[in-house]
Image 1 (tube, rainbow, N blue to C red):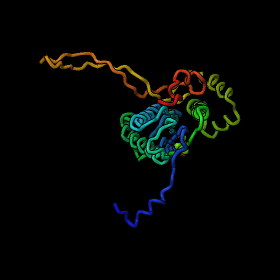
Image 2: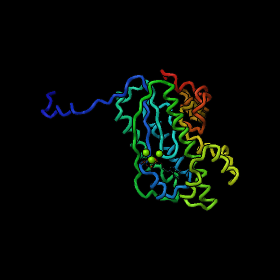
Image 3: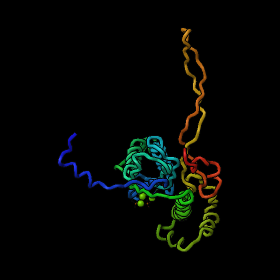
Image 4: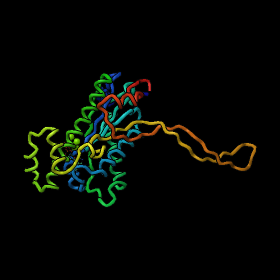
Length: 269
Ligand code: DGT
Ligand code: MG
Ligand code: MG
Ligand code: MG
């Protein structure tokens, strides 16, 4: 077919192929969620409805898109890891990033009512996205560890900060002053001695964030089986193995998780 004289503009498009053999990570983060959380009356410091909605959206992303082997989320962010040898959309970074962000954002609106029953959605939320390549299993593990360490540091700080405000009546400025220069041990001590909170007993979802992985599940269903020679249908239990996305609130930093789930880093999956 003859090309039009306008065809040359195609050459203005940039190449954004992700380097081969690298893990491709897409991280999304809620746009101005400080305000979004205020406007939608999120519980402080953690709103379990909001966190579960984020995870529902991430599950949808993993199920709808190709080649995501693990995802990790906390606060208003989620990271998605595409397998090293994925050739989805010829590894174009813009395709990965925009498909993850749009699928996630539309899911956030679509599923909002299931999690926030009495709280109307007051304006459309947005999510920024970025693509980062990790060239080895170690750098990928360190990336996920970094996000989980961030979750821990922020959650410990926020737990004490809001206890000082909600239970001791401090103003935000006073609470901030009180926590200035404190170390982890100091924050744990304030929680324990002033609020009888053992930080280690706080919910795992708040302390560790959420890890999404594929898991094989045996599904048993009763099915009507019609044998050719017979007219009568027969009910039979049919078992089949399916993979589905499961949410875990576990540690990613130690070796235990990676030993329990060797298939995630083993390529050729
Ligand atoms: P950005 O990402 O630069 O557009 O701005 P923000 O405001 O989204 O900042 P970011 O992503 O660093 O921080 C996340 C904000 O979301 C933070 O202000 C607290 C809020 N947020 C996230 N999860 C919760 C929650 O469960 N409860 C409450 N109250 N706020 C939350
Ligand atoms: Mg941000
Ligand atoms: Mg944000
Ligand atoms: Mg954030």
